[in-house]
Length: 220
Image (cartoon, rainbow, N blue to C red; front, side, top):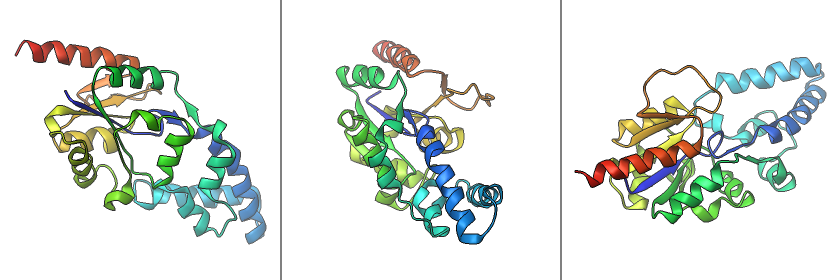
């Protein structure tokens, strides 16, 4: 195995603390604009999000801010509240280990360009050789196009690459569909559909899997 690719949100870090901060502002602005209650505003906003789930637009907070004509910008929120991005405790140690052991590291994200800003603000960007967002290829996971572009940028074949992510559909299915190894990080103990090549609860387990892969390859 030569390269390891990662999803960002709920794999390396969580933006949930930031979301919990700005959602009340969203509901307040919508309520004022439409003359409705905050509860109704919340319902409208969340229904719009769920109705577009897994689409290209679903991955971009700014799309929804503009849809409701809100005075909010996600890049501004990130820069104002960088401490609200929560890097998981196992992320940096795992990335350090992978880097020290010579793996090519990459990110494949369905999010827009501000995903790169997340990596910079959390100081995770220094670990990655390749970062591919939806806007690099006008495609989102699990479309093969975004995976093939990342592999090409990294200079590796699918059989020599691993994809680690929290979404079975986007990350694991997308990776396996192009011939990569799919590793599902299941931090929330969700139901297992036995589809991933490997299932892990922590990135520390990733190191164990890759050590095993290295031993197996050395005996071939």
